[in-house]
Length: 410
Image (cartoon, rainbow, N blue to C red):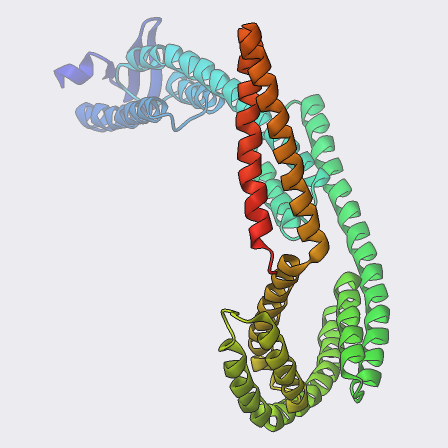
C-alpha cells in the first residue's frame, strides 16, 4: 500500500487520484469500496501502459517500425498516458517515451541514407539494364535475344522507381531498345521467309531436273550434270523446313537411281573385265623382265609386241586400272629412254662435232705451249704464268672432249 500511495490516493467519498508534477488528477471513483483494492486496480492499468511503452521501445530497437510509424505510435501512447485513468509513475512513462526520440531520429537518418543508396543502386542497375537491352537490339541473336529482353524486364520490375525524370529517361531507353529489337527481328524473319520461298522455287526446279536425269545412261555427262545440280542446290540456301526435307528426298532419290544404275553396270563390267586383268598382269610381268634395258633395239622390238598384246587384252576393273597402267607406262618410258641414249651415242653428226672439238682444243694447246716457251725465253714471268694457267684449263677440257668421242658407238 505504501508504494501505491506514493503515486495516488482514495479520499473518503471514494474518489481515486493520481499524483503528477502539476498536482493531483482524479482518475476514477471507488465508492464504498476498499481503498487498497481501488489503488491496485488503477495500478494494473498503469502496468498495461508501461508494457505498451516497453514493447514500443523493443520494436523500435529491432527496426520493426519505420520512423513515421514510430512517431505515430509514440504520439498515440503519449495521448493514452496523458489521459490515462491509472495510478503510477505516469511522468516516468512520458520520460521513457521522450528518450525514444533520438532513436527515432537516428532511424530516420539511417532510413534516409538507405533510401539514397537504394536509389543510387537502382539507377546503376537500370542503366545497366538499358545498356544491355540496347546491345541486344543492335545484335543479331534472333534465337535468344527475346528471352534476354524478357529477363531484363523482370529485373526492371523488381527495382524501385527513381525520381520521375531519371526513371522516365531510362525506361524510354529500355523500351525503345525492345521495340527496335522486335522490329528488326520481325524484318529479319520476313526477309528470311522470302529467301526460303525463293530457295524452295529453285530446289523444286533442281529436283525436277534431277528426276529427268535419273534414267540417263550417258554416265560421264550425267554424272557431271548431277555435280552441277548439287552445287546449285547448296548455293540456293535452305527452303522452309517441311519443303526442304521433301525436296531433298526427291533430289536424293533421283541421284541414287542414276548412280545406283551406273554402279551396278560398273560392277558387272568389273566382273567381266577381271579375266582381262589376269592377262595384263602376265604381260606386265614379261615387260618388267626387260628392265634394266641392256639391248635397246631388242627391248624396243619386244615391247612393241607386248604393247599389241596389252591393247588386245581389253579393259580391266577400275580398281586395277591405275596400278597396271602406271607400271606398264614405266617400262615403256625406260625402253624409250634407253633407245634415246643409244641414238645419241651413235649419231654421226654429234660424233663429228666431238672430234672437231678435240682438234680445236689440241691446236689451242699447241699455241699456248709455244707462247709459254717464247715468254720463258724473254724472261717474262707474268706471261709465263698466264700461259701455264691457260694450258692447264685446255688440258682439262681436252680430257673431257676425248672421253666424249670414245662414248660414241662406232
